Length: 166
Image (cartoon, rainbow, N blue to C red; front, side, top):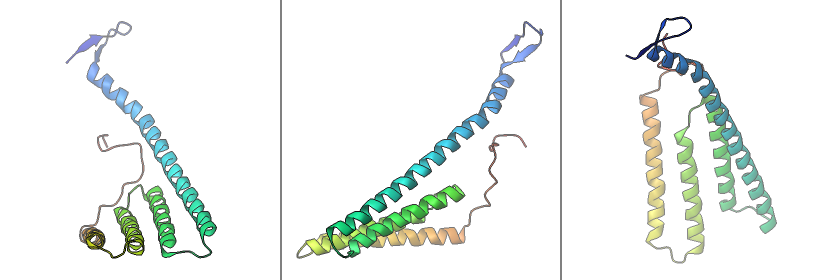
């Protein structure tokens, strides 16, 4: 180990303990900066979702006097994204199920558009339908796994990490 003598106190300095002290003192600052970035990112995603949903809602009224199923599914996608951001904000956990809900809704929206504009529907219809089935099976697996193997209790927020003593 590299040791030096402190010229002022003539005590030996252990560079490893200096490094540990440096990390111990800077870790709270790093954690704070990551949390700030995390919350700013969540607010920006939430604001962009509200903006996109509002803009889509206004455009929906401009183009036709009634909402189509395609428009409603788009609004449902925005709702799911908003719910996902809200859950992530409250729990700091990304609900993967919501991502699959969004994917199922988006593929269903694509399927409806595809069926309405393609005559006659070909094998692509089977592929898109199979995609929805695979996503539904993935959702079933995630639900089963989360029910059968629940996660441990979440520890309270703190500046301490797993490597910090006691």
